[in-house]
Each structure stands twice: as structure tokens, then as C-alpha cells.
Amino acid sequence: MFLGENPVFTAYLRDITERKAIEERLRSSEALRRAVTDSVPDWLLLLGVDLRVQFANRAVLGITPEMMVGRPVLQFVPEAERANAQAVFARVTATRSPQVYEYRDCMGGEVRWFENRVGPVIEGGQVVGLTVASSEITARRRSEDALRTQARILDTMREGVLVLDSRRMIRVVNAALGRLTGYQPLELIGRPGRMLSPRSESEYAPVDAQILRTLRSEGYREFEFECVRRDGTSFMAAGVLTPIDIGGEEHILAVLEDITQRRVLEREIIEIANREQRRIGSDLHDGLGQELTGIALMLRGLTGRLHKEAVAAAGDAEEIVQLVNRAIESTRSWRAGFLRSVSSAAACPSPCAPWRRVPPKCTAAACASAARSGRSSRSMRPPAITCTGSPRKPSPTRCATARRQR
Image (tube, rainbow, N blue to C red; front, side, top):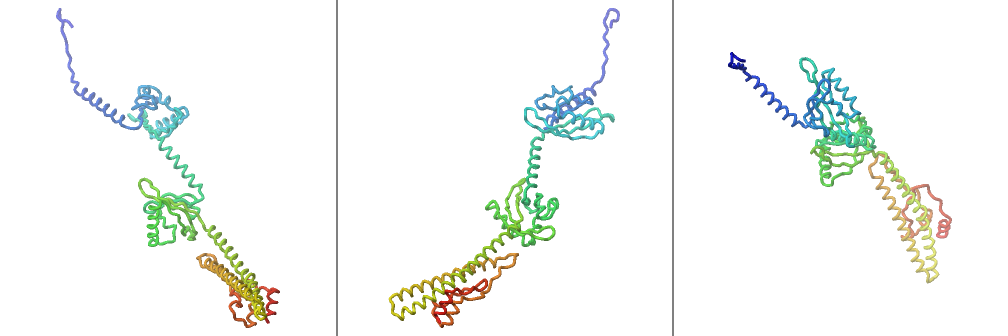
């Protein structure tokens, strides 16, 4: 401006202290926001209502924030996941409620999983944008997949499986254990393991302490115990206990199976073996024992005649008689051994009926003949063998021997 020929300057002054303070606060706020977003492990995005990226805190899968700003966010979403992502964004805008969804990325041939949490940005009562917080959950998904696989394996096992914590509370069970005990698996979770045992708490404690000592010294323990079902009935169970560490806490893994049927089969096998032993003992008495007794009687008569006739072979005949008598004693011992083993098996506790010991029913015909002849020599006494079956008819040899003795 000129006043005449002289220039005139006009100055206007405005107080901008407040504006500068606001700008400074904005810069501080921006620095603080940047510090916060940079320190967050998640990927943070700010989207406009048109779904274009307005802000990104870090590079995503090799794409820098500068490359993302101003571009539609769906360009950076795998094609197979775009429809789902767009539907989620639309629901958040319409409902103004946060949504969470997962998607899979297969860039570079490696499968990576991400969890996206989408929320609305509201100003003046209107949705003006969306926030997206994305976290990589690949490791978590792999762990979850492994747990699901393990759960399927446990549920397909025929054996019952349960995990007890340090307080002996049930933490994990499989479907097979539910079938064995009659409980639903969820009914057992959180309940004491001793509920499956008929032992009282006072009886259970020392057994538990002994098991724990064995596990710590040997690393596992095989066991058999009586297990109680939900309806109060019981069955015999067998399995293996193994200590495992879960989250720094000592747990016990138990794998068990119902061996009731196996026990029944074992008892049947023992019964068959005992019946066979009794049959052999009976055969030793009715067959070999009585035949040897008859031979001994015949040889004794022959020896007497040889002595009367002063035949030199009488001594040899005496030796033969002694050999036969020793054979009779051996037969008697064999039969006694068979009966003892049968008695031992019968003494074992079993829910089955105890073995029935069969009383003697008869003696050999040759023994009766010897008694009537009045001979009291040890070699002439019949073996103390009893018969477990029906009395056998005397053989012609023994009858002839008895007639000659009379």
C-alpha cells in the first residue's frame, strides 16, 4: 500500500498459542499412537467406509504400509477368503458389533493361519471406518489340530484312558473308559479317581503313595485292580500307569482294560489242566500202579518157590522184586505230586466254584488178594493209591496171581 509516494505496510497480529499447543499435542498424540501401534505384535489396519487402507502399523506378508495405504484392503486378502472377509466387514458396518474370523494364507507354499478382529469406528453416531487387528495363529492351529487328532485317537482306542492330576482328580478320559465304567466322560472330569475303586479313602491313600514311589523309581507300573462301575457292579481291570508332566505339574496317565473274560478263560485253562492231572493220577493208580502190584505179587510167589528149591537165581528174583517195589513207590509219589498241584490250584481264590477233591472209592483187587494171603512184607503191601473214577475190573493177570497165592 502507498500513501502518496511512500509505501505503507499494514501488519495484523493473531495469537496462535492455542493452535500451536493443539498442534503440539497432536504431534505428541501421533508419536504416542505410533509408539503404541509399533509395539503391538498384531497387524493393525484402519479402513475407510470404502474399505481402503488409511493406516497400517507394519508390513504384512512382505507388503509395506506405504504400499497398502490408499488401496482396497481386499486386494491383500487371498482370493479364496475375499467373499468371507467382505461379508464380515458388511456385518460389522451394519450391526456396529465387533466380529472375529479366521482365514488361511498359502503364499509361498506354506500354510499360515490368521485371526482377524474387526471393529467399527463411530463418529457422530455414524460408522466412518473399520479397525482390523490381525494375529498369526499358525502355531495355535497346529496345536489345536494335534489335540483334535489325539482326541480322535483316544476315542477310537479299545482301552480306557484317564489322566489324574497331582491331587488325583480326573482331568482327561476317553470314550472307552466311559463304556467300561458306565459313566459319561464329562461326568468323570473333575472327580476323584478313587471313585472307580471299592477301596475307602483310608485304604486308598497308602496304595497311592506306594504307586507314586514305584512310578518315580521305575518310570511306569503295571497293575491289576478291582474297578467299580456306575451301577455298583465291579470288574477286574489291568493296565499301565505312567507319570507325565503337564504344565509343570505331575500327572499320571492310566491305560486300562477289562480282563474279566480273560480271567475266566485262565481259570478254565487251569481247570482243564487239573482235570488232566487227576486223570493221569487215576491212570497211574488204576493202570500202572495195580499192574506193578500184580507183578510184584507174582514175583514174590516165584521167589518163594525158588528159595524152597534152592535155585541160585532166587537172589536175582529178590532184586527184581525190589526194583518193582521201588517203581510202585515212584508211581505213588508221582500221583501224590499231581494231587498236590491240583490242591494248590483249588486253594487259589476264585469267583468260580472251588476245585472238588475226589475221595478214594476202591482198591486194587490184587491188594485184596494179598491181604487175604496174610503177607505183611512192605513189598507185598499195595500202594496207597485211590481211584478217582469207577472201580476197574481186576485184570486176568491179577486174578491168576491171587489164585496162586491162595
